[in-house]
Amino acid sequence: MLEIKNLRAGYGAINVLWDVNLNFKKGHLTAIVGPNGAGKSTLLKTIMGLLVPSQGEVVLRHETGNEPRNKPLSSRRTWDMAELGISLIPEGRLLFRDMSVEENLTLGSFPKKQRASLAHNLERAYALFPKLKERRKQMAGSLSGGEAQMVAMARGLMAEPCILLIDEPSLGLAPLIVQEIFSILRKLRQDGVTIVLVEQNTHLALDVADHVYMMRSGRVILDQPADQVDIGTLHELYFALEA
Image (cartoon, rainbow, N blue to C red; front, side):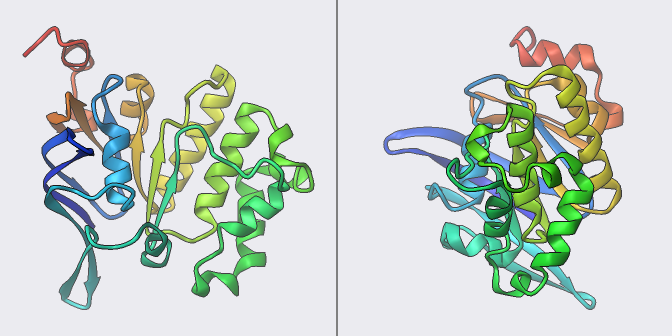
């Protein structure tokens, strides 16, 4: 559904991604793991058009009848991505702190075709995250870290994305909240949502994923179905104990 081909990208003269090739299948949860500085967040920013690649392309593939329809994303603007069905749940939540929970969620229905479904999508969000219904009038800036992460996830789902990009959802959260977040990811996966998950917790990532990529120093060094990944080998690669 989403294909990354020979991608290079970075910040000014500093290149971060080196000839990255990835394929995210429809209805699958694909995990991207790796240490800090591996290029995981840079990859998501490039997909979303926040960074312009110096080489390669990002292609969104839709099936229309028996014919695939390809949409190159490299020249698209970030604010076009929601209309194309791609939502990013960023690292650190990035909520509008002086707006209520429900106002934050409403902003997630910005794409024109989703505006008519606002009420339905709000109820769906509250069904997935019951705590948010209790907090719907509360200012987002007063929420706990776990509640804020739930708002960020629910806001991303309000646009009814065909692809959901999630950057480090467990970061800074208590273990019980992390388990709750990952239970919701499992449910979304079962519902057929295509998810790209960036996550440093390798055990959690392997448990929930269909496919795993590992990145290190801007390159993909492991590409395997999740049920074939040996956790010992993964950790050796993670900590650069194995070439």
